[in-house]
Image (cartoon, rainbow, N blue to C red):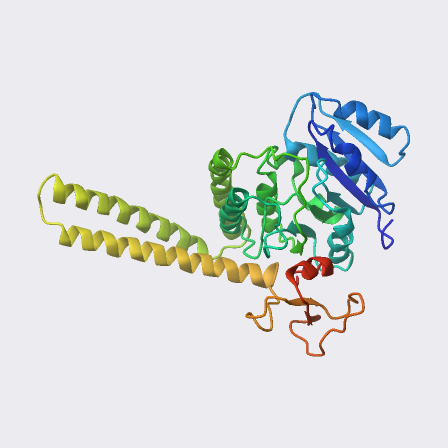
Length: 373
């Protein structure tokens, strides 16, 4: 147990024979149950797990008869955690990317009642994402922006990060069977959480890469997940701002998209009229441009309303006292950090500032980037 809470760790595993042993070896002793989901691996993953289960009573193996995807694997682990009455379920990959030393940072906000769901953030600074390729960082940044719009969690960072923890109470509010089963589940589950008004917190931690090879191909993945995010976005607007509680931002989004599309179509026709039919361009072009600008402004207003709703209900950013000093970190004022003294002034409720000498030292501190209301 950790702070009198029953803790489970869910580990999705597909062809992880090289690293699953190392992953299991470093799971902290305070973890009560370890659920490893073998998603129909074709290598020796399952055999290794069966051997480890003989000596580790905490280890439970869930085997899928066919490959269902990482999302489905995690959902299988979540369901078992609920059956076994675990109070918090953390997710750590089977490729040893998630450093167990940071697990308390994911658990503490949930135990303290500050969050329902905590998720990792490797993108806060170059020191955190050391080892992440530029292509991977670019893809992750694009998906971060798209996920902000789709999920309604405008403070979310690094949504592809699979290092997470969630309370059992939050899990019971979700329709687990409706969550996307493959890569993209981490974006999809955020949308489900937003509609259920669950509070999330980003937990800063450094990226850790070694022998593992990412199974995500960001070129095709971004296109595929973008379609999923669009569907999630439309579903969220309907479920949260039409059915559950009407909000005018829906009208701004609808009007904005209609006007923007009409403006683009009008611009294309104006160019056709000018260069193919050899007619005048100015009147049609000006009207099309004006229509598009109005539509774009409506979309921006809708995003502003959406962000305001998020800040009121889910998350807030404590910010930095001095944005020029990138080594000043916001941390809970009651949290002891080694032998350093926190400066006396206070910012957002329960937050103070601590000066550090480097970005790497920030990683050691494990500060909470966002303070959940």
